Length: 358
View (cartoon, rainbow, N blue to C red):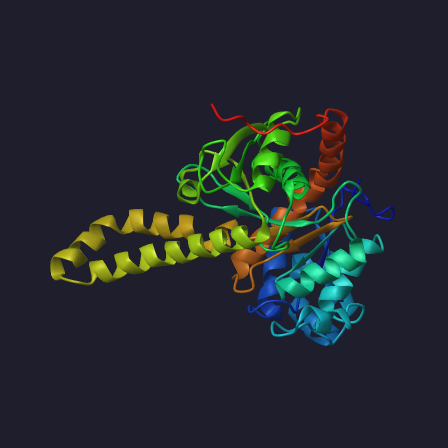
């Protein structure tokens, strides 16, 4: 079960915020915290970074200033730092100190837009994995034609066996019940085909285990890469290598579509007229594909919550990542995962039977 800080109550959630992480800069990160404070009046912050600069910004952010605690450090993890380099400053950098706040019971979750590899390494070493979880997974929302879907793992593990994939499915379903509000999320494994005999041995074994489980989810079998965007499943489970490629491909495709449309509307005066007529629809499309609207990836399976904001996120995007942390705290997602894992182990079949060819 996720360790809950004894010194602070869930009714007053505390976010340990790395104000030095990402491309936005300290002022934008703190402006995002101000927005989150307005959305969630009971939310409070521990701000990790250079105190003089933080105090100067707090003078312009009255709601945040009223509840925030400042923890000073001048050290920052750079985007170019290797995880091994960052680990040497895990107790003195703004990123490492934010994670340590969760470990020490001073905060319920840490949020950072900094170096993903460094954040993963620090979080894993500092917080460790929950009982029953072999490896953590990075999960995030992906826009589809219907509603948002959750994809995991997105890069925490380049290789995953059947047990890992089942654990990812359990964690992803618990995450979906929190952020998507679904009682029984539809879960599928990313595969090279939808037929039961397709895929690696690990994927087929994981599918057999999930079919035989009594988890609060609907296992839909396999989903191919070109079907991810249709939104027919709520949780897509894969290894971190494939998941990261799928996410980056989806983000790149979204930018390609918007770019091609922009160029097409510039091609002639008639096209420009068409743009004026279709501008509301195009704005809605851009908003739907905007990564900031879906910002906030989560390292699931640790003894504490760590949320990764996209490094290039704007103020609104960072505020959304803080909102994800708030929701996970309020919904006690760690306890949901622990309960579901115990239920799976209690009803686990002796062996996972693979489908037999007809």
